[in-house]
Image (cartoon, rainbow, N blue to C red; front, side):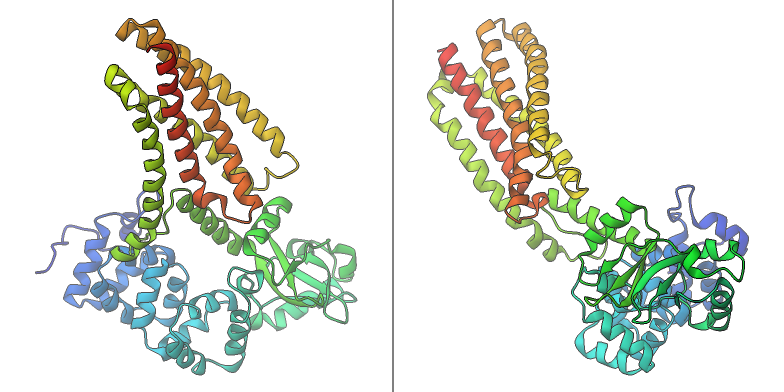
Length: 468
């Protein structure tokens, strides 16, 4: 049955205002408009609707459509539009779209992309379809993609685009500008620097486009070029992102082991890397993998269940402490009420420290140089926080139960647990980093175990000593 959309905007200028909210998110009412046009096979209406959106917004739109609607939408996209959308799609949805697009159509779309984006898309293809798509592409484009794919995943070689603008160091500004105008069809879609190279094609500097436009035509490039930060082709993309952030780079040349210029990385690529790496760290800290809109239920279960099983084992160890003090709990039932509070507050304190430590490691603010200083600071913070919480909660417990010894046992246990939580939250990621493990993946499970175990043991042990 057709969806009613007669009362919604139809003019293109109205659609542009209607399609996105003030937060640049799709208007919830816009998606049914597209679905309705697909149901009716109204190509003209679809062109109007899609024409109101940026390719990134169309990629977002496809994430809200059903699989069938996505497949029906694809024939309405020309190769240039399809190319821009492919590089914006979520991984799971892009794989689905790539399966539905004919190899010849996909080959035309990839010709519109820079080599780095094209290689990223081709990498998602099944082997058979990848061969078909590459065979349908011009030789130059195919060679550039195959060269990019030869580099390891998440390296500068895979991230870079092979299209660069280079000029010999003896050229003048005028010669360079004339060259850019003559070869405009072959220039990268986006570039910020002209790399100055020696006779062996090794970069010796970079002339920013802004400097070219300001300088006199007879000025040698050597006079306006700036120093460069070279990126080895096999450098990990996270390291590349760190260098861009540290030195405030907009672009950087990528060089092979001999020093020869083979490509460039621009800041738009780095924004994607920073987002990807940050997302990975956030998911890893929670012990899950990326579960986007197109994620399969069973894949999501398989990614999360192992960490839950590990957490079950550590919880069993913590519970063994409670079992050891079973007699004391039977004699004084209020212990069962209060001991989860000690563990919970310690867990929260540990999570705070852990989040700060993992972020500091990722941003290189925490290393062997200042590790002890950081641990010492977190220990003091834990001790002070524990003391403040102990006074406040101890007073509250005394008000409820009128038992000074119970308040004392609870307060001392809380100080101990918050202190240990802060220590564990700082040491766990440092230890895992030293062992060559990702500190974001399993630190939280370790810290949770330590705070639960310490919280139960400290409170029940002190209660046994003081109260019984």
